[in-house]
Length: 354
Ligand code: PLP
Ligand code: COI
Image 1 (cartoon, helix red, strand yellow):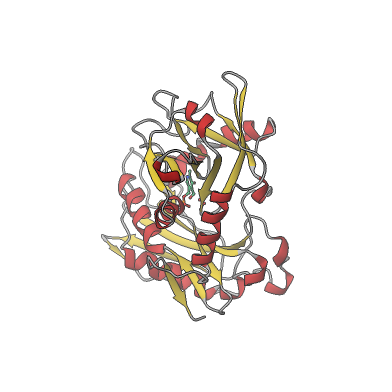
Image 2 (image 1 turned 90 degrees about the vertical axis):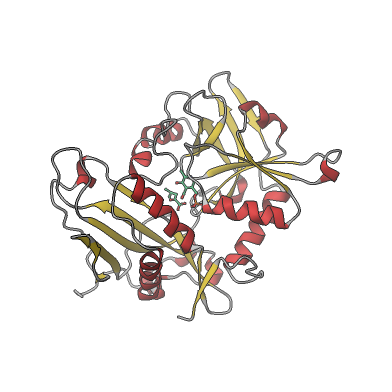
């Protein structure tokens, strides 16, 4: 390994971490060549040498993942549901015709990159985490539109804080009426890099208008809610007169949204709490019936949605500032499980003694 030049842990402003890139000493890489995955390589340089005709560069043969490791009160490190990220990168790689890494290879690489950068896992009190970013790319050359004959899987790690700076105050979202992030039968259900390239203009325009996030509708009819640019969407409905007063956790089901692992976990926790869980198409109009709204994801965790503006009719759906009681309960339980403070009853954590 070459000499490392990452920021020293003592120079990091641990209590003011944002969701941004901080260089850590080691990244890990593995190449698929001649029909097989090679050894896991450890690198200290941040750059990757790619063939100029690599399919990742001109044909968008690239996908990624995002997951977190937490330094916990008991001194141990917990990685949340990495097998689920492994399955999702398998699905993305397969759809984009790249070599598919095994769950074992993926998990070994995650464990390795976390362990090698353990001094960069934020301490428990900071509320931060070590974000692992696996990236998979077609790294072999092609001129015709064909899959690469070489695939590179790499992973780097960065200490992070909250994705939305407003945090639990609640974000403002604007419904995007001029762009779709994904096509009805396209790549929205995968974590293809192209989905994010396609969302950049939309996000920028939203920010310029003063909104924290864009909210996409289903690309076929623009009638149902899909998701935010970097997180799934959910609503909470509490009707004391229905279902014995059980609260409802309602989240869109659609081919064009990313199957969020956080959302999957929240649906399970909601069920554990005795809530009614509904994953189905959600008409825009239904926003009027929600008592709470939020977005969820690895980076976003649960971030309350305070307002949603629809430029089509100038209407603002208002869910109030701050976090609602059910969103708070779900958030607290998710975070407690991730930190080993609530029972890991579904076996979601990989615990490392490092
Ligand atoms: N939706 C999009 C578009 C995302 O980029 C993410 C982030 O990964 C999510 C949803 C949330 O998914 P997860 O909970 O697996 O991080
Ligand atoms: C995540 O939540 O892990 C994401 O990938 C969202 C975003 C930063 C693209």
